[in-house]
Image 1 (spheres, rainbow, N blue to C red):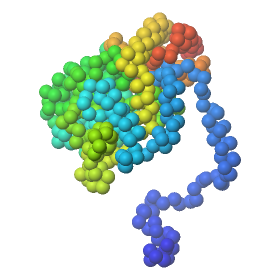
Image 2 (cartoon, helix red, strand yellow; image 1 turned 90 degrees about the horizontal axis):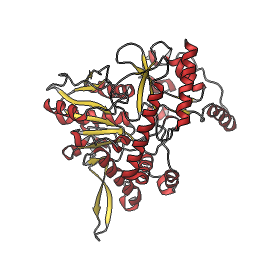
Image 3 (cartoon, rainbow, N blue to C red; image 1 turned 135 degrees about the vertical axis):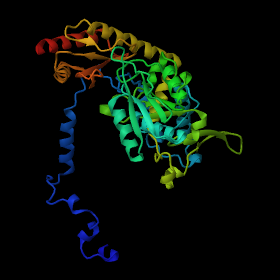
Length: 434
């Protein structure tokens, strides 16, 4: 290889790498191991994971029940090994599933066009922001400070290379809702809010839409999809682009992933949609068929002209979400939301009576809420509660600028005994702190 390339030494291949970036000593790595040794080491590490914790954690990942039918369908070989359906004549099954996924996302979002999924909720927000900047030809974004921190970090990472600026919308420290201010003016491409927001509080989407549209900006809503079992769809309230994470749609917690993102928009913006869209058509015999459509080749081969460089999707996770939504149906989705609402409010009522703990906000909430521990080491309390068998969190910044808050969520899976146990565990931990 060196001879063909016209080099004498291996180091010549790396001459273009600055000296400051090259290692000055051998890497400090242990010697290689056999396959048996590696499997044993990984098994011991995996055994350290706890699977017995009762989950009251929120922050975008929720412990919903995943029915057996989801895994049963996923394990079918034609779905488990599915790949990009470039040849529709041999890919009708997976194309139809993705078409159904898009249809269901349209129904959840209240918008007419959806793509065949994205990586996760955070990347979906970033892709929506790129769409908005391309549509409006503006480069300033206004993002609610009540949007979860990981999503804001992802958005900043995506935006920086393109020179997009990001400003924040403040949070009302009493209600926990995003404040609608004059920060939205005529150079803003999009306003980004979550429904419910990162503190679990339900936002006034219609008011945000009116403020954004008055300035010629788009409204992007990051939606927790099970919320529309009780709440109006964002699209019906004026949202231009609706995105979110499908973790709650049959994905399970899975120690943090994988999951699936979704994006829906108005028909006028369909040509800017990232990734791919599956469409329905008929063949030469008049039979119904499915094909990939509106998939611009610029995303593959002419990167400098692309709105997005995402050319793939989370097919297997999208299949799981489709099976789960089909299993639930509209009535099941409402029952799921009602069940979570009742258990979350019961949990909040019990925790509000715990000495040394207070609910952080007065705004309405659906399936999670924030608590404040004014005189306690928040991280120590969360760790102690975990040792007692209960998972709460994440720990988030307090918008008052004074300390941290802890998120608590209660899905339809939580029982009265679970709630009583969590209350007792928190009382013990706070008493130990005192």
